[in-house]
Length: 340
Image (cartoon, rainbow, N blue to C red; front, side, top):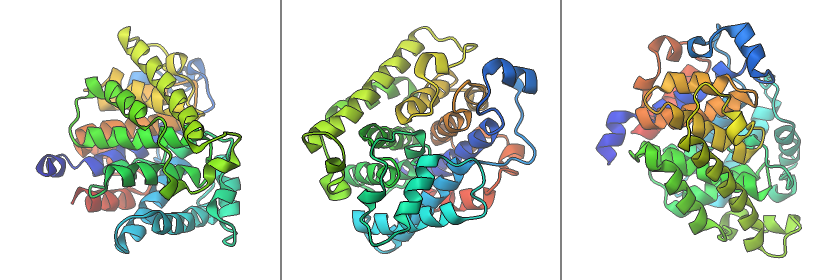
């Protein structure tokens, strides 16, 4: 398995795909499909903008990646090291002059609270928010090799919860990282939705206390199990919609009509997954379809790119695109680190 991963360079492919999708979807976000077609022409011929500027989706993915690297440099990845390192990276991102790409309000509010170090991180978490900011940035956790299932799940949920505390945000982030992991390891895309459904059922009432502490008590739920089950149930409904859409594939129809506009976590996962699975062997077409959507196009395309890149490796992407994506050096060096 390691040889396949190294040969494929899944981490480099996934990070580049994520950023390329983000840049492709940046100019189309907030537009309906007729407006996108009027502005950019046929969606199957969409070109990467010049310059290829990304949004907060890629910036926060890099922040998480740098935080993970710092936490793992100190030893085995655990909740305290992750929280400390990623909290610092998220706060630094929120204060950076480059944070000028229409960042999500939930992330800004939470990062402002995370900067007040005397408070536990749970105090900063926006308990009623399940915005896609929770899972647009989680791909690195599917790409780092030496993690146990418990570490990957707990860390995916904790990084989501630093900003978005709704249980659906946690479950969607966990599922997104798991999907990236499965694809990086060579899972067959046609069976992916079924594998994700099984994973959701297995984890439906598992609350990761070691990673999440007392987060559930900030919600209205009577127990931690009931809190987290709410999130998995919404994700299972979203995966059902993906399965339904794939039974009668309609590549020319706006994917958001089948699986949602992607402003919220479970819809971003579902629509990003649908675009990837509609065009498994045409990764660039998948990105273009994801960018030509009526919803949160940059986040949808960002997730589509993460899935397609994990499956195909960097060979999926036109060299001319990959060479000029913003933060290219950072993306490639993190990818090389995790591919090794």
